Length: 183
Image (cartoon, rainbow, N blue to C red):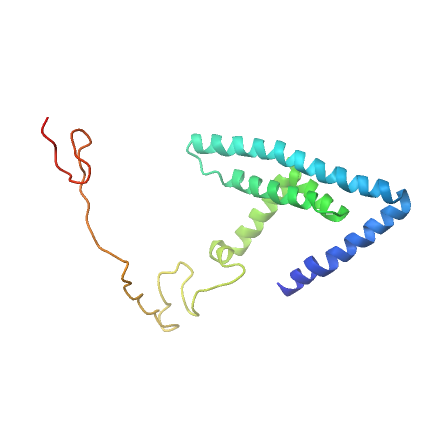
């Protein structure tokens, strides 16, 4: 994780500056600035167009009763790709374009799904930080016999209440009383 942060906050900006300076030396300062501005506006336009399409597919998936997993991934990739495009730099622009183009977005989705399947469902959820106590089963049902203690039961909090409910007929019911009103 530390290596990722070093790459993200130290190496990437240095590489972006180097590339901007090289492009500026090759084509000039003003054309380089114009190219970076055009990239940002193109990113905003692609966010709008691709985002609308992803939202429509998300709504269709919900309308048909299907879990919109692919659509949620596409929406997140579009937002992240547009953010990369709007940031100044050519390396982030390339990564942003790849996330905004549907074929490369689908290829990345398939890759991430293959990694998640290889790692396993329990480890995918706890990928960055595993909070399970040592010796606990993956499904969270309790300790493996002889390998760990059961966690203490949660103490009852003063805002936890047990209660019951009953259905009140909608027609002729007074609000707050639950009794039928005479008409």
